[in-house]
Structures are given as C-alpha cells and as structure tokens.
Image (cartoon, helix red, strand yellow):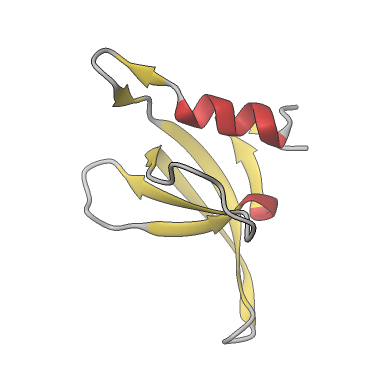
Length: 86
C-alpha cells in the first residue's frame, strides 16, 4: 500500500536527462457537471504534466505516445504501479 504523498513523489521522479519516469495507474471516473462516473480506467506508461498540485487536487497526466492530456483527481486513483493507494 502506498500513501498519496509518496505516490506523487514517485510520479515526479525522472530518469536520464530530466525525462519523466513512466508509471501506471488505475482510477475511477467522476463528473459533477454531467453527473456521470463510476467507470474504472487504466493508464499504462503515463507521465505527470502537473508541476504543482493546486487546491482542487487534480493531476494532469499524459499517456506516452499521445498528445492527449487527462485530468485525474488524486482521491480517485485506486492503484499506482500495481499498489493500492491509501
């Protein structure tokens, strides 16, 4: 089991010449505007785009090989690199 602050530290790690280290997560979707959610999604080999975590606790992630940016709330991340998040 990994705590949220340790998870964010792992997400910020780099390899080589300041290149972000990829990670995998499983998270749950939720949208208050559309009143939808409850789907579980998995990202393999994603990198963290967010430099600082704001008050809303939303991270911006990018799956490797795409230009797509995905917003994920910290509290909705269930697994990080195969470890449950506490």
